[in-house]
Image 1 (tube, rainbow, N blue to C red):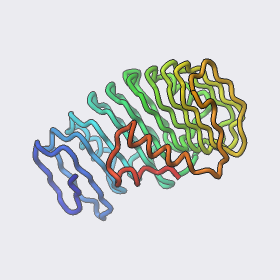
Image 2 (cartoon, rainbow, N blue to C red):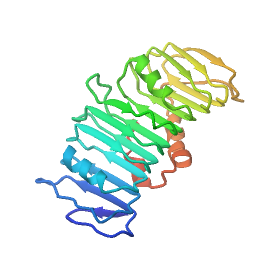
Image 3 (cartoon, rainbow, N blue to C red):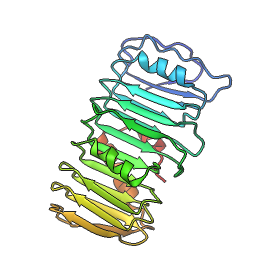
Length: 260
């Protein structure tokens, strides 16, 4: 992986992975127009504007993995890429992001994490073409109950679902024929969970008190598992999922995905 600190221009069709970290003022001007075969881009910049970001993406037609960390100045992220398979957007408390639009028909894994559960945080819009998604992680994404369920319903092939830190969520309904793993953590006011997923075999819920479960045709050999909120076992499961299912092997990337 190449790390850019002061470089302005990177060129080379053989380059497949780049990590850009820019906290300089004025911001570094990054030009990777020549890296047309790039497959992985990690971007951590509190200076990059919407225009710069979208110009950057437009030059990467073969991009398969995109990791965005702490890009505070971005207000609108619009991703349209037929090759993209993994998308991670990780925010902290201070962010200007209002809209995240995704049109990526090959997308398999989408992880969105935030440092604060904020009603003014960004809205996620997913195009109908993103029907191949298999893994979805939402951490402190503020949305009405119906909006969450509508988002999940866009992914008929979804197998792995993680809902974390939805402190205002009281009821949750999941109907997905392909879902195999459902993990709920940090949803402190959750009172009822209804699941209709005949292939579900792993269901873990962590909270202050066990919500009322209604699960149809569950195949899980161990049944439902509820754990006290003080248990941090789910964090280990989360990291195992990132490694074994999403396929993230880089320790640095794993460490930057905000989960606490």
